[in-house]
Image (cartoon, rainbow, N blue to C red):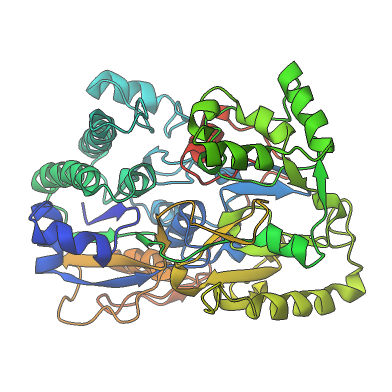
Length: 536
């Protein structure tokens, strides 16, 4: 194995330093100690579904096409998958050059495209994913026992749950070990997602964090000892840290400024409010509920008795959690005051897009803004958001900019029109309507811009600095380790620890599907339960 990439979702110095100090992860720490390491600057938006494709392709979302957990077609949406990825991943470049790869658990790789080697998809894939080669999942299960993408967790918050997270970490290692033995690849890529998930499920619980990282370290110790790769890279897609300031509700702000129209009774597209925030956590999803209770909620909403008001009253009485266990989110959505996307000037579609979409004529099904007014409306909104301050007088945003400042490429039209970058990522952005623009952050821990990169082994010069390492630099660096030029469309360049092999024009691909396809409801439910998809 000439190169082994270890992907650790959300790893950063803020997380790793205390683990190293407590000697929780000696194998991982040894890579940092014998090699070179630094921060790895993520992208906007610094979220798993968009950031890992950027790392794997070396291109920004305007080129590779994945901006968020959701893909939109007008006002319709679906959970995103790899059919919307427009650029080749680094193992596809290697395959074209005659090198085999084994890729396990990398997000947004389902369904996989054929290449020389093996791939088991990761996060956002359904629990029984299509693997490459066909039939590989059954083979892996025969060889190592059960294999799952997601932990089999009771979700009750007890320490027993940690075992479920450690178990899937062990499955990653066993699957990679089996496939590396079977295929003898020149390149290996093993990703661990639970290092991110643990912060969303158990915020401020460092026992849970240590349990997950201990499991990761055990897998790495066994794999590195067995295969002894020439070069090892540790990479993350973004960092993780506390959110100490406010939740800023973008659509609520746009409603107050006259840009968002709302509707009641389930006739509009729901604005996504966290399942956990609404205290309605059954995980049920779909269209507004058609049951008698759903009908009653819609009628009440038309009279002004919305889900938001009901939840606020229940919260004040201390009953929201109890009631929420028995009320499906689809019922809550039926009674929620909602963003009427078709009647609004501008809106936030999904909080993890980090931006605002303008309801433009000729582009959106019911566009309200004429084409010749687009730039004026966008400029006015940029000024409006730039001036927003918290109740403490601090700026909410470090940057408010047109999308062209962060994205370029053939699919830039799918991006938000205005990018909103929270100041130091201390402000938690939300798309929900909640009666007030500011509130307490829905999640006390969430993503930060700086991740981590470390490199060790015979293929890298550890006497030089990594420089200003960027997420887009990883794919060109891996290609350079094989003596291959980076793609001309790539936005990154090889890190200074390797010798560049130049630039080459590679064939482009287009695996996009113009039709929104139905995605497994279990995936959507898992994203909602982790707070990624806001539900009402």
